[in-house]
Image 1 (cartoon, rainbow, N blue to C red):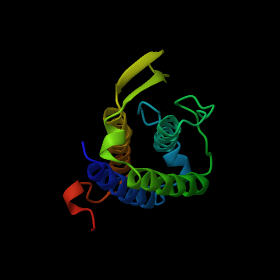
Image 2 (image 1 turned 30 degrees about the vertical axis):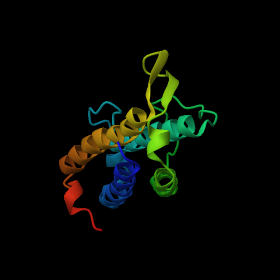
Image 3 (image 1 turned 135 degrees about the horizontal axis):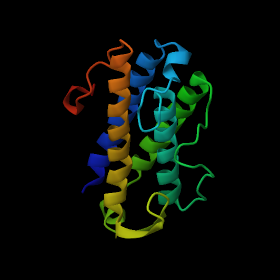
Image 4 (image 1 turned 90 degrees about the vertical axis):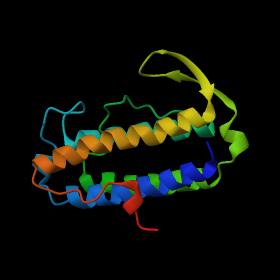
Length: 163
């Protein structure tokens, strides 16, 4: 894995989040927060989960203290506050990715998994890949929920991301 790949993923993440949040802003708050049967119940719950997951992964990578959140924590009740936090975090993810090196990505890393309640060890690149894979997975759920609310999320394919 090369650092350039993760820098591209960081740009993609920020672009897609802006598209998703712009679309979600068209959905009434009560509908965004309604339980639609998703794993994190609602659009709002899923967006909060993505933010929590990204925050946890960045803290791990930077050797910082993990935030005191469960994976289903609603950190931001207000959509505008959630969006502002998302934009800030996307900037931090882009800065993190800009600083990656191939040597750092090849280093071993061990962390305690909240989901599996055990230590997991592997090469750092695998866990950075998980950061971006997790976002994409749950954003896909959000785009499905958006469509169910009558909002088109727009193009989602990496090759159509603006340069």
